[in-house]
Length: 346
Ligand code: ADE
Ligand code: ZN
Image (cartoon, rainbow, N blue to C red; front, side, top):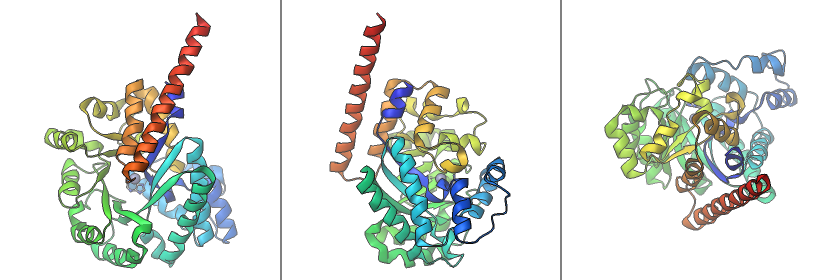
């Protein structure tokens, strides 16, 4: 099963590019930009990655990205992610970025998007990975700031596929951003939102009803509300679940307690993602492996998770079908290898 989890082609749909900033790269970009990191060494920084909850992580996450200044920096950040994703058989990635966390520091929006886009184009050439950008609003900032960010992004049109909502959830319900999301949809963008990570099921309802999202990011607390669970199953509303993140941010005390398997049993269109892999101990393949072993996911469940990732993506039907047949091929290949291994042991 471990081998199947590793070899399945996957789409990653919940990935904050700033959360892929590995400590080694933080130090090297800081040095290039002549910025002093407030930690003595890579090891000292890594040792600080002990989180009590979402906010304690966000404090370090925003501090880390402060060293990103130039187009080259954003390019190098994304290029490092694509290289790791390729090794773990990610063939398509829909990537979040947090423009407000950069523009607030005086970094122009263009610098961020140009750097990320260049790395995406190169990775398409180098690895064949397709990707899309999702611009997130920081929900702990004002709706007005989100609206200004939206206005400054409009000129990028189809360089961005959707808008999202992230940062500190509790106390910042989706309803706060209804007008911003209305305007984003009116301009042709799709919508997603973090909801039900630490916040209550009501926030998931709001994201669906008011922000008209195509996917819920995390959504793990949805299962506390039977009517919401029924709705999510009926509508096949995808949940982008991030198992290692949920344990590192103490939403679940252990991966064995995670409700991902329960979701699959109920017919929820769940996917596996890495959220902020540099901070949470693993990329998407590592999340598949860890979830498989802690929850004893079987072949059918692993296949479903991989297929769900493409069904829940913003790919065209043609692209989706190509990737789905790659999943079929990977499964057949794995079955043949297994048969061969069994024969040899007879
Ligand atoms: N920003 C980066 N990672 C996040 C997460 N897990 N939840 C909310 N906002 C985030
Ligand atoms: Zn997230």
